[in-house]
Image 1: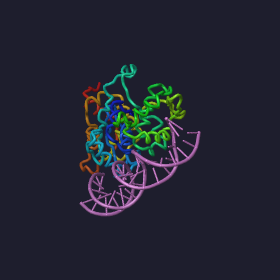
Image 2: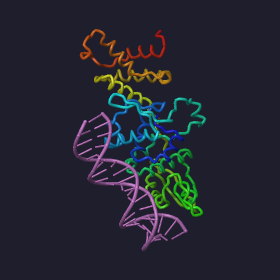
Image 3: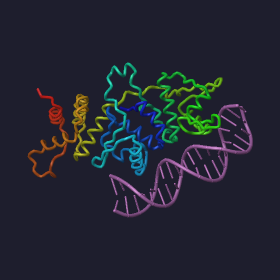
Image 4: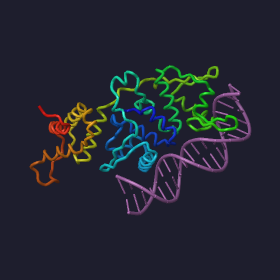
Length: 300
DNA sequence: ATCAAGACTATCTGGCGTTC
DNA sequence: GAACGCCAGATAGTCTTGAT
């Protein structure tokens, strides 16, 4: 589920997010399940994907929780993190077709661009807002009056009072931002109207989101938590397929997969008395059986 | 693995001035 | 008139170091 709900994104503007915090949330959206939950988030993993320091990981995790953007539950050397309000599980195919699901895709090339990380926090928000407008407008140029553009994003004076724009920055700063926006957008000023549209390499929709990848992450997390070191690729794939097949039931049941993995290991090692001698590995057929039982499906 | 303190670095603003 | 380069000082963000 590489996406952020539009109304969740809108709250970004009021939370005074730092650059790292924004990237943390984007990275979280990459690994969340349809309910907006990311299981087994490890600090090293985030350090790598967000390119942040150890301390930055903890700072972000704590500050985002304080700001009410995420909910954190401690796991085994890792965390289960819920992206608050970013739940997509209630939508059906029809909802998507009818255009009733408003979201910003985080699977867009702009987020993997090498310059992205260098952008300032509010530049990121501005780029994301314009990206959303351009995607919604099917890549047609976004036309907006110069004055209106500045009033929307930057503060301005009105009758001696300072009126805030959504970015709460000065006009001068917004002018500076226009330079960086040129990385991703073509910006032309014609008759007092800005014409803003995505540059060629970025004028594309996302690639299909990787449901499989997210499930595979879950399996690896469960392996880490149950101490399985020997991760057979074929068994992993088969287990992923089973989870994918029953994903709807699994998500609504709210069950903890760790228990199924533990049970799988117990059965595999039923003849081994000493726990430390257990052979810890994956066995898809056994997983399948336990999984179905727990979901209340009777094996035929 | 986690976190706190302090060091270091980046950012924003608003003024002045130049260019188109 | 709009855009923007440069500058200094205040403020905020991030990283390094080091302890537990």
